[in-house]
Structure formats: C-alpha cells, structure tokens
Length: 231
Image (cartoon, rainbow, N blue to C red; front, top):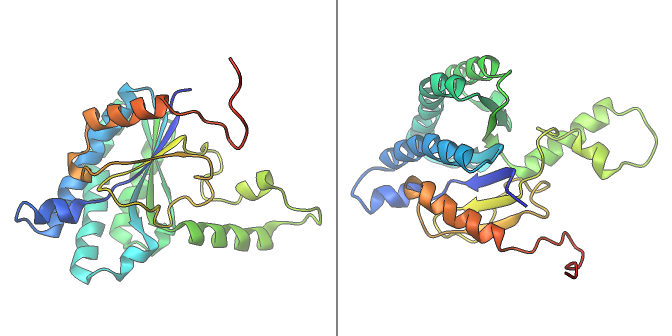
C-alpha cells in the first residue's frame, strides 16, 4: 500500500547550523527552503498529502528574536512558493491556532490559501502554532458549543471537530535529526501511522532520504491491531 499522506517533524535546523558555524536563524532559513524540495519529491513519489510541523504551541517559549525570524520565514516562504504551488497544482492548508500568528504572516498565508483553494493535485498542510493536545481541546470546546445530539459520541463524529477532518490520517510519520519522540504532533491522527526516525537533519533531508524512508515503509506489515493475513 503506497503512502497517501506523509507527516514530517522537521527537526535539526539549529544543530545543522551550529555544526557549520552559522546562526540558528540561518538553519531555519535553510530548513524553510528545503520544504519546497521535499514537496517536489513527494509529488514525484505519488504522495497526495504532506503535513509538516513548522511551529508548535510550545515554540512560542523560544527567544523573541528566533520567533520573529520564524514568523518572517512563514511570510517569505508563503509568498515565494505561491507561483510554484499554482504551477504544480498544489493546495496550501494550515492547521493550528493560526490566529496567534502576526497579522503580516496570517495575511500572506491566507492569500496563498485562497489562491490555491481549487488546486487538487497535492496538498501541503502546514502545522503552525499547533499542538496535538491543543487540537483536541479546541475540538472538544467546538463540540460542546455546536453539538445538539444526546447520543453517545463516536470516533467518527469527534474527528469532524478536528482541524482538518477531510484529510486522511498519515500513513507514515518521519522525524529528522534522530530524536525519538512525537513532540505533541497529530496525537489523534498518528494512532496507526508507521514511524520512521532518521539522524539526518532537516535541511539535508532530500529526495534520496525520502526514498529510503518510503522503501522502509514498503517493507512494513501494517496490521492496524489485527493479525497478518496468511498468504
């Protein structure tokens, strides 16, 4: 079964920069540029959805200068990528508490989201001011406000209150830089995703590394809690 939806925790920008005598901001800029390369590779491999963890709810705790650079990169990336997304039939989506972002970043994002809304060849879903726990809290608050039924809640109904209920759960989640944790990312959606951790830092994670990850995925036996079917 091929990967339809790939999720990535883009980790290691700071360490990549440090090992090269660069600033953390340089690392984040290199990481932002790499998203376009991975989008292109994912499209070539037949993936339909790519969700990338760009900025978490916890990242607001970072130094103000670093946060400022990251917010600027959101605007720059969105503006620079828009022509390419239109050319390649890529739709841009976001998940998270994006209302927390600076107005200039939100404006650039919304412009690209609106412009690409009818594109249906590939979906780039960026997690911004996102946390898995925050998503579930937001879903429950929305449900308490909108739900009228007294019937017991089902998983299918709860899913409809999540940020992007129409996007299928990830088949695979990749984390770069070697850290062995999911860092509050897609806690509901990753229930049966295959996990792949690579020591490669995000700015160096390109087409060749993605191919290795997909090859590894192809060797997995996805049972979803069941047993392997006898051949």
